Image (cartoon, rainbow, N blue to C red):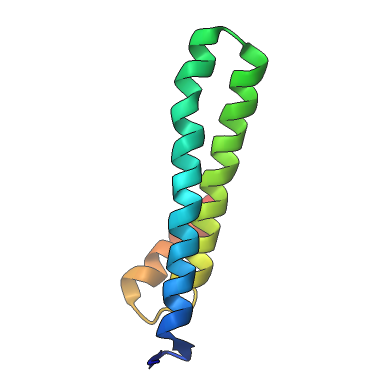
Length: 87
């Protein structure tokens, strides 16, 4: 078990797996949008689109928390500032 920047490699791997899992759920929600749109159910479409947007924000937040905030990389810091400005 290695340590990088105060976090174990296992912890980083676990966090990465969580983000990948979140992205897969997001992809599933996004792919169902077309089906819901074609069905003509506006209420379901808007609800599903809201879920996709919320899932995207959640994935972005998780990525920022686990990767960007603790990073010493100047490019990561620029990305974090970009996210802060847009929020």
